[in-house]
Length: 430
Image 1 (tube, rainbow, N blue to C red):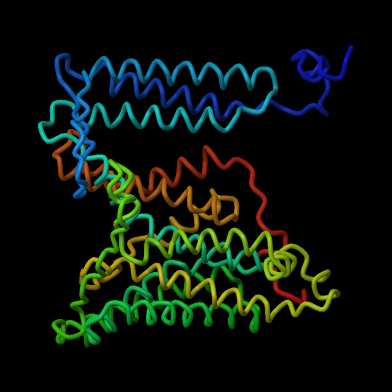
Image 2: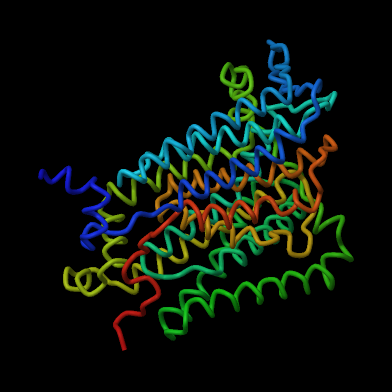
């Protein structure tokens, strides 16, 4: 019997514990979602209704006609495709083959299309796709910058639970400085400084005093929330016209590219923070895995003793990365007030913890973390969009979308992930 036959024979696999157990998580999860989708979207969509998707908008010169689909038929076809993809995942798993990533991704896209078709069925205004994508990018900003902060810190061995506090301090500093200066670009300097100050506290307590990093992160989140709330009520509120009225950060429209239907307004008509997000992800992806700086950082996070033997100052590297990563999170906090919004108590609303989940889902890689942040940003944007068009989906469920997406993504899609080996371990060891 050949090795290949031995590997794929279920009887032999059951008798040989070295082959390992079959993980049915992916096909079971897909089947459950498809059945729920069939019951909720397909069977309860009234016949004769239409779903309207607007392809124009965003100020483009060419306004394509809307896409109008029969709601019930479209949903049933999409769910049928999802069931076929589920069967493929079942076949791969039963033959002990790895389910290609394209299958669950395609399944997610198809089920999302079915949900949107059901949600806008019979709505005269329909859903403007360019606006949905544009608001998705905007909602992604704090998640993405927070996830990048987590990557920088944890790749060097420091657990950064304080992303929530760093985003909050960045938003607070941005609102105050932009309001007093009358120019939001000054806020883009102040916000990273605010995040870096929180990161410096995290670094000192974690590296110098060797306090448990998770506890320090949680305490810093509570501390920043208390400080910003106190200042907001005792100082800022009485001077809101001069201290909490930031100007709007003007979008920068890229000619020609911004005129592409659907994707043009969504990607090429944003403020500088959006373009900085893409530049940051591309730069970090290259620097972490293709530069000497990235190699040293990863060695400190994986095997600090070996790095020390090679002449790398472990704790100095960790200090630098924690402060730099926290400054990145603070910069992302500025996005929360960049639309000319006043700073509010707890304006981050748990986004730092979702950013931490995005980092884990992205497997501690900038590109993967951005993809996960886009998923959470889309859930947040979809919540607001469906409320605006009076969707039949309950508002309570819509408010839960970003957090439900976080739970399902981390529990169902990540599987087993390996963090940096020295994460959370002080150096030198006690």
